[in-house]
Length: 178
Image (cartoon, rainbow, N blue to C red):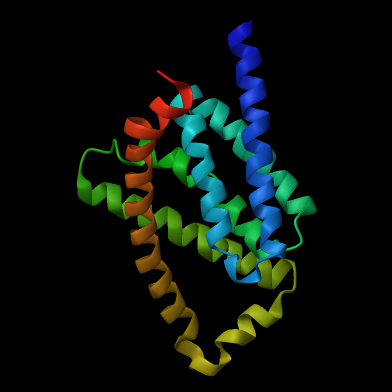
């Protein structure tokens, strides 16, 4: 019973932290991608301490709250479509049998998420100004941005790996006093 209460309390705390970070996108519009990435990074502690199931619950609650109450819908969609669940999925992808399959899967997940979020923003929510931003680059603008996004994703994946290691080997001991 005590463990379940701790899970609920910690899950609620981390959901709130994620949503607070997402709210900050309204204060710092230039952080539309950085703050959802940081919010997703909060889930590393939940995965390590309580497992993927609890982390998925925290992700789902933070993503739904963000979609409904955060002003920057682009940031909320990026959290919901990628940054929120990727730290949870990362562990599973890194257990694949070969490094090649691992990276193909990681990049496949990233590209599917980004393309889906982009199409949803433009086609469903009518954020046509996002598509118009590529107009200056011509018809290849979207492909250039997707390529740059993939390079950024690779750097994010490396940074997330290092953050997980830092959490497990240093921060966890200091925070939990274990």
